[in-house]
Structures are given as structure tokens and as C-alpha cells.
Image 1 (tube, rainbow, N blue to C red):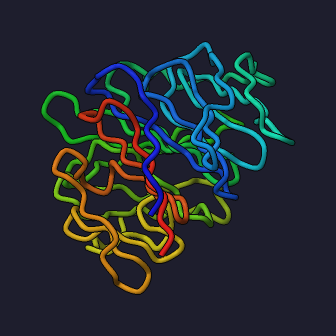
Image 2: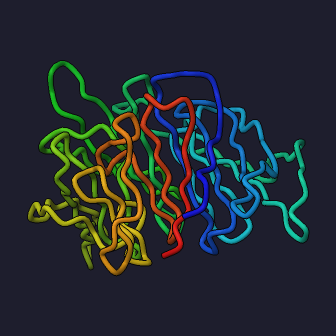
Length: 270
């Protein structure tokens, strides 16, 4: 196992949002509701670029050579460094789009996390809890701004939701570490989109960010196991967390909970 890379920042209880690029060469990281995203070169551990999005960031996705960030009724993108991947500290936004929300919904302080679907057409939004009620999950179509939901997140859960690779399901982790999912059902004639609860399971969906595509796994929130089942690393207590605060990217594991001074990235080679 290579030494861990730590993206340092001021001590805070806010969590971090991190997205690995599909080729596992770059990582985009920010603090929840911050306005600046930093792109890290995973080979060297050095930052390649930073960008001020001009909006509080609730979620992001890296696709190809582009970073997409979603904030307060705004989506911004910019191109990642290419070629020799030299530092570009003055990277700037290349495209900005806005979308409106129904009056019944507000991106207020109660908004938690946003995840973007792989086809970039939908976003899943966690809002709440409010007035003693559990958090709620909404689904929004980016092109139209149409909002679907809410669906009560049974068992709580204040981490971000996550789309499966086919974009047909949204999953989240409850306060007890249980995985719960919602199926996205589209009416063939009416065009109405519904969110239907799937059966709860103790097994996370076999896809990032909660499981490694290379067979690495975390057991008992303490041990990192290789694809052969060999113990590779024991996480010290202040690094331990539930699955909602971890993100896998192939051989990389990012620890993102807010008690850490920065997002910690671990690389494993068995």
C-alpha cells in the first residue's frame, strides 16, 4: 500500500465531497457548501487546478475531461488539465447553466447532498431533516427543472445519495449503516416519474462509491481487505466511519467524514 495522500484544509465539521475520474488518475475534492473545487493528480498527490464556481457546492461529478458541480439552482463545468498535467491554479468555469425550482422546494440550509446521474440528466437531492421528520429525497430533471418526490428516507441518513451506473436506481446509507434504494420508474404513456422503495439490504450496491470495482472492501468499519481477503490496513479510530462517508475509486479509497482535518485518499496494490 502506498502512503496516504491528504488534502489539507482548516479543521471543520463539514464533510467533504470527492469524485474520482473514471481512469483513476484524478480526483476532484471540495468541502460541502464551499465554492471552490480542487483537482488532485493521484499519481503525484499534487493539486493540478482550483476553480471558484461562484456557488455553494452540494454535489459534483467527473466525466471524461470535465468536472460538473451542482449548487444553488446552478450547474457549472470546467475542463480538467490534460497532457503533462501541470499545475493550472487559475482554471476557470467554461460553462454555466441555471435551472428553476418549484416554489414548494428551496435549496436552503436544510439541503444536504446532491448526486448527479451518469447521463447528467437528473440530480438526486437530500433535504432535511425538518421539524423532527426524517430526511427526504427528491429527484429533479435538469433540462426541465421538474421535481419528483419527496420520498421519506427511512432509517435516516444524512450522507449523499448515489445513482447506479444505469441511472435507474438511487441508493443511500441509513444512520445504522444499512443500504436502502429507490427505483426510478417512468410511466410509458404518461411520462410521470415515480420513486419506489426497494427492499432494504445489508449489502451495498456492487458499484462505486461504496464498494471498490477491484474487490477491495472495508469490514467492521476497521479493516481494509484485498480482493483475496488479505488484511491490508487497520483504520485507526478517528479514520473509521460508516459507508456514507467513504468513496471508492477502483484501487483508491477516500475518507471524507468531517472530524478529519482533510479528505484522506489511500491507494492499495495487493
